Image (tube, rainbow, N blue to C red; front, side, top):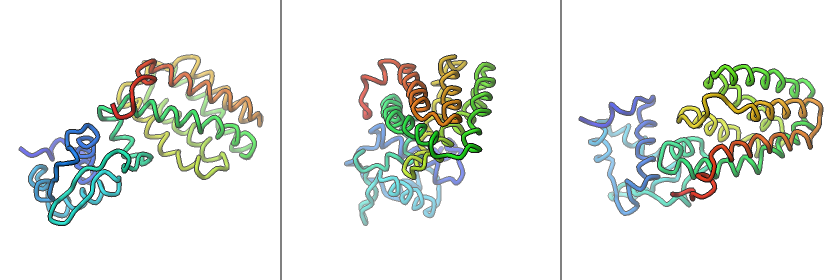
Length: 243
C-alpha cells in the first residue's frame, strides 16, 4: 500500500510535499540521503508529473537541492524559506512545533505592537471602527467556547491591523500570523475558552486604535502577545527552534 491515501489534500503534490517537508524538518530524511523522482513516484503511487511538481515545490521552499542524475537532497534550515506560510505550517506539524511557536511569538512581539501604534495614527476612522465589532464578536464567541469562529475573527483582527499599518512589510506578515493562529486552534493548543485577560486586551486594542491612541494600542497589543508567550510557559522560553 502506498502512502498516497494518507495525504488527502488537493492538489496532490501539495500533500506529498508537506509530508516530505516534515520528514526533512524532523531529520527523518537526512541531507546525505538522495531521493530520485522514481523513488517518490513509487513511494506515493503517483505519476512522474506529480513527482516533478513535488520536487519543484520543495525547491521553492528552499528545502531541497536537485542535482542531475543524483536526485533530491535536503538542505539545512538556513536555506529554508522560513517566512513562507507553508513552511511555518509544516514546522507546526513537526517536532519543531514548540520552537516554531516561540520564534513566531517573538516575531509578533517585535512587529504587531508597532503595527497597532501605526494603524491608530494612519488608518481612516472607518477602518479603525471595524476593529470594535470584531473585538465584541471575539468576546461573544470566546466566552461561548466557539474556538473555530473565534480563530477566524482573531485572524481578521490581527491581519487588519497589519494591513492598515502603512508598512508594506508588516502587511506582508498577515499570512504568517494567519497560519500560526490557525495552527494553534487546529493543533489543540488553545484553552477551551480564551482567557478573560486576552479578550479584554483585544477590546483595549480596538478602542485605542479607534480613538487614535497609538501608545495605548501598542501597550494593549503587547499585553496580548505577552499573554500568548506566557500561555506556553517555559516550554517556549527554553526550547531551541530546531529542537
